[in-house]
Image 1 (cartoon, rainbow, N blue to C red):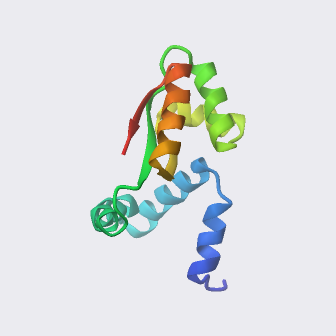
Image 2 (cartoon, helix red, strand yellow; image 1 turned 60 degrees about the horizontal axis):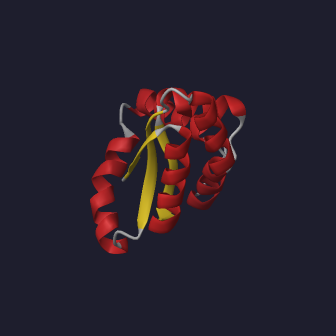
Length: 121
């Protein structure tokens, strides 16, 4: 198997859906016994200090009672397919990462209007 360089790996990640990235992270946990999200969480404060609080992550905590409206909003915001958007609505998680504060607030408002509980990180 050919060795991937960093740029090829990042480009491959950009083409993945959120669900595919989650499956990749789970496979990395199983294969290497390391939780890559723990490394990302540990590195986040250092990155935040360098970049400042100019970017936010929009996190879905709960889809609420109007899950269909939330799924539609997720699809509109992320461009995900129906299955991926439903999985995200069912399980919660990051809707969009590293977006400007203004965009994060717009996304939050749109999802809350649809009935979801949202957190900005």
